[in-house]
Length: 185
Image (cartoon, rainbow, N blue to C red; front, top):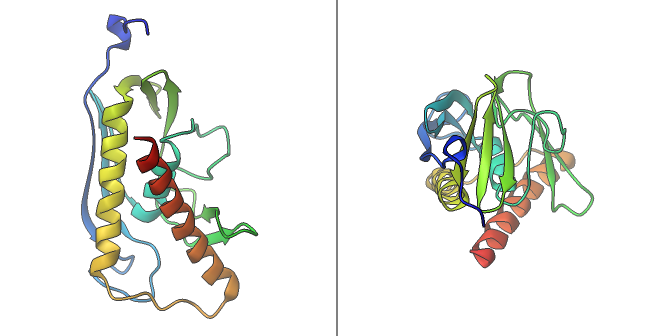
């Protein structure tokens, strides 16, 4: 593999999540299916921070471990750090979910290039990150979200079957992506 040029030099990467809560601001809410918190994604000198739906953000980040994603491709819905994720729509197999929310959030794109990923932020600036660093941080963020759910009381699923299926598909896809990545790394 060719060496990175100075302009492509890999930069440090981190995802910091704090203040996990449910939309009502409480540490526990058995009826809220979506976790929230303040998330900062930092790649070298570039960063984006947003109080977002961490569960939707985590799933979108897990998807980028093996696939490119840009705001223009429409593959994964809305922003990487979405304000909310109030609707989850399962596919017919319950293996994939589309999460829909409002228009607010913060975004960036992810493009794989060899053993690196190139993150492009909304300001147009790009940074190259080693895939090893990127995957470690995404998986750490996912484990934080899982721990927050595990510490909460079990969820009381809505009566609506479509909502139940959306939530089931969310965790089915999440667990599949985690397992897929663990088998590859």
